[in-house]
Image (tube, rainbow, N blue to C red):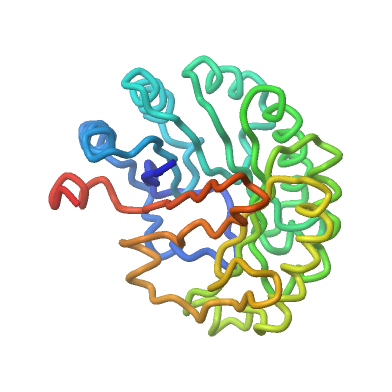
Length: 270
């Protein structure tokens, strides 16, 4: 499945310490006409799916319309969210009514205080995310996305256990590696990242869980090595990481996600 990842709102209700796009969050929505053109362009260029992101997409006034439109032209639809607003079941039901297929919810620790520290300090953040997952799992294909930093290395097992308890369908472990995070001391060493990856493999994938990991050069457990920090230009404008999934475990599935601003899609026809 080829997925075009489209930002719909340049605003967020969190202040994650590892955010790669914080400098871009000026509070402005993507114009609806530009967003619709990008969705049409995705379909015309052979993409199977669109994933709407931000900032935080659940803040976007055009989110419901955009999802319904994409679903209506036959695209698989997903959102990538911090999950905070999805603690409101009525909002989740409105998303369900669009035909939304999948949600990717950020959960960076099983320990509430660690998640709180990583996401800006709100003491109810973790509780809201867990509530959101309870709402989403029966309705959508639900992925927990954990960004691995030097501050949550010990949380991998707990996140996998919590995801299993909640009935989550997939765990996606991502190693933070953009230059800003490197300067802040948040990027794990290669050995730390590899140890965390192996922990997740044992805790989630080996028992049969659907597992993806990003930021590693190889899909081989014996040879996997984290990639070096990526450049801001790549983080903002071009390809998000290729989805390095284990083809044997996941039946040959390999996702490639591209993240390109709708304005660029419209302007360049990439």
